[in-house]
Image (cartoon, rainbow, N blue to C red; front, side, top):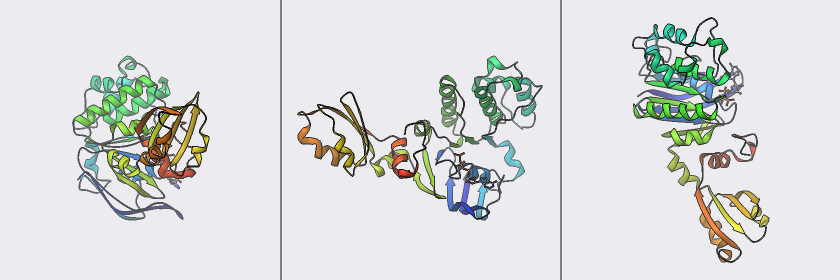
Length: 301
Ligand SMILES: Nc1ncnc2c1ncn2[C@@H]1O[C@H](COP(=O)(O)OP(=O)(O)OP(=O)(O)O)[C@@H](O)[C@H]1O
């Protein structure tokens, strides 16, 4: 077992962030931890890393206490803060940090993984925001860890860097590493995670794989061409969102069977080219979070 949490509660003063949360993580799992700002994702990671003590409950990591010293060689964490060490070049900092580990990855490998080969001789404090994020990734990987934490890893990365980053994560996945990651880019989580945890109101509202989540919520997208506006569809209880653009109507629905059955007399008459797509993690997330998450994610709302 890589991680075991039993009935963990975390309070800051009177604010309860996690309520009796239990979690078991097996080797090779890629856990996508999602939830609104302030849901407690970083707090959960900090507890597992031993950077915070729970108010109550037990946590074990690699069969020992989270703060156990020997974890240093097996755990890598890319947290939200990027630290800049002035007066060191990228390759120098990676060499220096590598010396602390028993089995460091070669600097050239780290540079490749983080797509920083071209910046190897650049000063760390002169890297751009996205480059610095990649540097933080390289530093997290320096000891070739088995258990990897990635807290909003792709924030600030451009499109190409982001793609390169997820390719690396895919390789780590193939290599059997265990990864816990948070991201507000849910399409990224959907692709890479073998298990999704949705944190809301201090507990996991969902814990399982994406396919099961899709079946459970049956949230889907229906798109079609219509001869006229059909804004009245917004009143149907199964319709979560309605969009119309140049006679193309797009619906996010809770149960596509019900909606299609009701639309069926019009299909081929006033409705054409019907397409149905299973819901994305973003659709399902919106459904779970309900109306109180207008702020969300990816600017999709
Ligand atoms: N050291 C602390 N002292 C007091 N409150 C804290 C502390 N750390 C976190 N909190 C509070 O705990 C809650 C959870 O914070 P946390 O950073 O874990 O959320 P998150 O899910 O990671 O959010 P985000 O998506 O914004 O990163 C927030 O309300 C936050 O204000």
